[in-house]
Length: 101
Image (cartoon, rainbow, N blue to C red; front, side, top):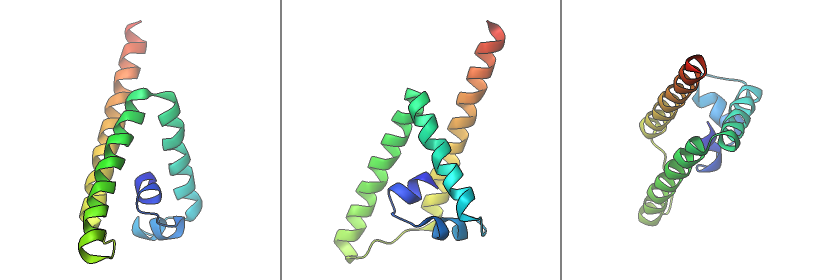
């Protein structure tokens, strides 16, 4: 959702519709959560920067070819799944390190 908003320029309503009709306030909450995570964890911030750069490059190439930015749902879903997996790993690592202390 964060990437769709900040890279794709999608509205919160459009993002919500894409994610099975979620309400725009749910989308806003998700975007704010990622922003907080970026501030709290440098590795999350770095991951988002890499993903943003890669997606902007891809969008730029498509825009140059077709003069229209086209988004494929598969790309967005794949990136979202990878980000969620990585965030889960990071949370598990933090939880594990706290228990070990």
